[in-house]
Length: 508
Image 1 (spheres, one colour):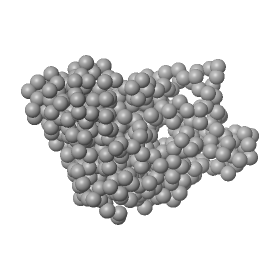
Image 2: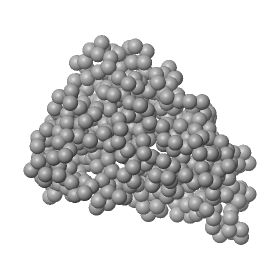
Image 3: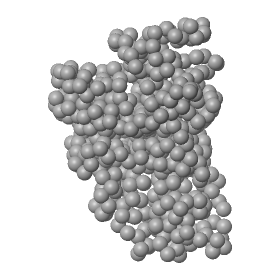
């Protein structure tokens, strides 16, 4: 069978040419008995073949769900190292990810069509959605309203993540790059359709939560707040978590492999986020893509954008309180925090951390590692180091401080969920293969170079701390009880960018 990797251009992928690979995935999924591809003589299965199935849309949905799982894992694995959440400490991932301005369409993981490649997998998810919604659903009289709604949600999420993480990308065969704003607008169209079609309450809730996220990315505060509140009104503690099967059908949590699964533990958290690590403790561990805490943070941000910092404080406190109620699991930690070149990283609970030179020292951010034979409690959905009570002591007049706190809570609560790079304002280039094979894309076009705002520091500064140089002196120097990050990007964002909903940094 033909597979998508043989097609010359992911952005210009013809939907008909990916059906065969999709059906191969279906054969490994629980719903595979809906369609028997062994009845097809042509090795390249066509849409007509799919339409001969008893329930074509239902047949394709498991493959669409599976592609979303791969895509979400790839977005987390690709974007998180670019941020000040984690840094790369082994060759399993490209070291260039730690230096955003050096990223090019050829940079390692950015140019792969494998499980870890965000661009490739996003375009695959979008193309699968096109196949289901544009070619199969119109001819499928058996497609239920909920099945159509679900397909709209999955395609919308492809557009949302393309719009959040790339400045432009094509969406048609041989097409020119489409600006991020248009990707987000397409997501709105899909999400509104899903919300109006769905009878299932969870589908409606999912659509509303992603609508809130999308309107934030577009800079439309009133609409973002409306849908965030609508989602919370349905369920004040909801969480949609994409599960994985541990790799049985190639659907393992890719992020888990790099933070905990591989002996090299390629991705290491910054010291002030150490208490959140590893978050994903097994290859089947799920990744959240919509949850109530995010809606609270959205309500706080939109309130601040309208000048209502008192409402912002209450919603920040509510987000913190909910995050601290979420589950933790016991994890047998074996990570000795061995970084690149054999350098030992902070691993002693006595260490206190400053977010930058102007911040106070804080205890409890670095945990004792390794813990064998003891177990380490690990938050697997949300957590934060900032209590609701401490938030409520703040003054509404401390606007910069509250914006900084918003970004800090977003960083901690949405850790390893693929959101931080968008908050930083960094957007990746499309993969090199798109430029080389798509006649609609030329070198230098929108989307072909990395976008890094001027307020992002040079090199690896976002990941560095003192006494960084002293790490080479051995374990005794490392056990110093004070670490200072060179830069607090939450302070930088609060002062230089302002609020994302007020400054979405979109062209087109």
